[in-house]
Image (tube, rainbow, N blue to C red; front, side, top):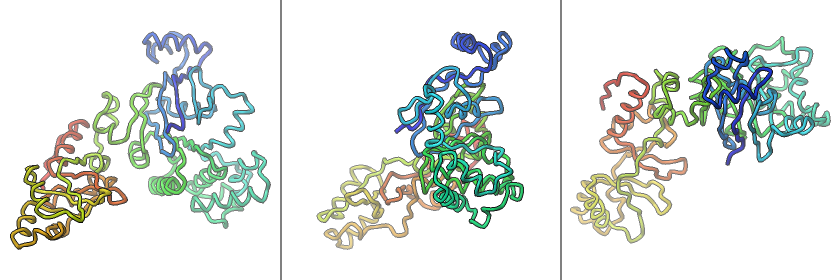
Length: 410
């Protein structure tokens, strides 16, 4: 279900935005409009939807419009045209009082510069939004302390001032301030880009941990592809004010919309991006284990399918084991035709999770002669990944990113 819907959204910086929008609709580009009208195109006809509970990353080069678009979601920047609809409410049509209330109750924002008030303590900074909302002091303090603990800052830091903290700690305070009001939506504009690489990774991990616990809708602005791939459920790529492509990292890697998107992903190792679930195929026979099921019936099923491997599931499609034509034949020849099918299971068959990356499953795929079964967190069977499928995916992804296909020996 869409939490945020962006429809035909424009931002023109200049005196006559409608003139520039008219030129854009006639096919004129950003450079032409700046030259002819002295107006700058910030965002050009953006359309996308953000699902509830996802981390939606908007990325692009400097000047692409990504920071402008996130600020239009809460009208820190006023749109020139278009709509931003949040939970059915059109933010662009709210009066000032409704907008202030909406920001306090529904959205919080974390900035690259931390934006902490130097004259306030850590606790006072975190409680700032709660105080604006006129929350009583005792509850405000309690919620602020809880928010600090959420981001890994114990209460002993509450009375320090921002100048006494490291950059990473200051950003934790900024995140805690955003979380303290318990927003449905968290807007993060280059929130970690000012941090050194180690602290940045720690903050990304902290964000993912918080997301697992609370499932907020997070709109995250970044210019860093590694960061986007690491935390994003979906990515929107912007160029010159346009949203060029929206999709999962896997979708964009395998099917880039144009050369601009392709250039962004050049050099990305596809095995770290594409998951087992993306390449699993349910093309091998599955055998449902029942009370009346027999080895002979399984043998007939495999023979008719002309496949050598079969995957045994229960009635809820949970993976139980794997058999081969050879293991069934051996069991039949030993007089076990009336025995349960588990008499023919191949030993030590390992499964992989559908969320595991290709890099994660590579050793298992490479070391087994059979297609590896893929399951979800409840052990429900989703298909298999064969060596051929793995190789074809790797080859296609590397061609897409203009990388020379490397030899892969299994």
